[in-house]
Image 1: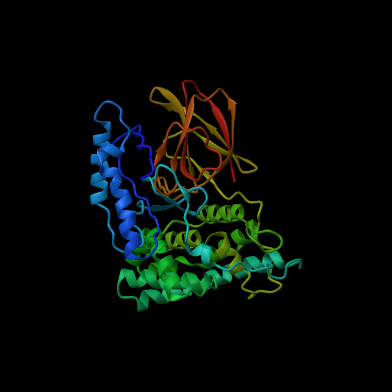
Image 2: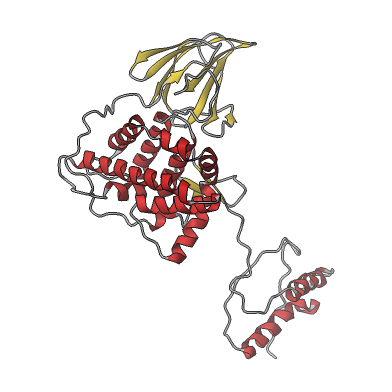
Length: 399
């Protein structure tokens, strides 16, 4: 037998186990040969001689590994890491995490990935393209509203309702999926919109139907018009602008929750498909004022003064708050009660008198407090909080 060097002793003899998938020739003789080669690692004398028991330890570790090998025809021996999903409260996109929420990445395999992008955008280059496309979006939202309203009548269980709502989304974005693809997409989308489904199903059909007033639908049309490109097309950044504008403009409620979940599930690809539906021509968007402030800053009860000074900017004067001076700002919320679903974004912070020692905010929807925060800019929040050891005045500009 030709000479073969002994296996080197690993730096860590018994680390945590992981899984390695390999393909082998599909024949019993090959399996026997591979089994025999792998078993060589379970002999202590095949390991490097170091003058101690390291070789025996390595052999024992490998023998345990060898005895646990599954020699059946399996597709994969490895357990997939658990995935959790969320809607990013700042961008509106669905994200996934495989490390318990420590880091988030764009979710793969969702509905947006199977929506066919229209090329080119509808009537590209025509003067009315932008308004026509926005009106198409609003029209497809109407289609979704009508079908979901009907789903309350036809569905018997929450699961049936969820499946029907997903089908309504597919109709709205003009997408037809095979049974296999639908099942895979459903497995991702339904958990993502589960909370919204539960809230809408619990509130019932009447609450859902009553929410969609003419004023609400006009706000959706104008949000679509004010965030779309001139050629009737949405980028990812423009989808985020649309999502945040809708979130700021529409009043809270189960119907809004479900609509926001619908938008997050389809992303920019879904909006583009809706915009290209071709249902509108020479639409009129003259009533849409795109220069209006998306967000309104409100003063929580018992805090300092907040004054609108123009150009979507609010002058906020601090008040004595225990042992420090503070400014609290709510967004689109004049109810007098903290509401995590009343959200907005700040585009500029300008301290005009004094100085601030720190700042924080409560996250949109969850209400989670982030204090201290490095920045308040561009974050979807329901409350901003600034503080100092001395009185100060700060101007907050909103999108």
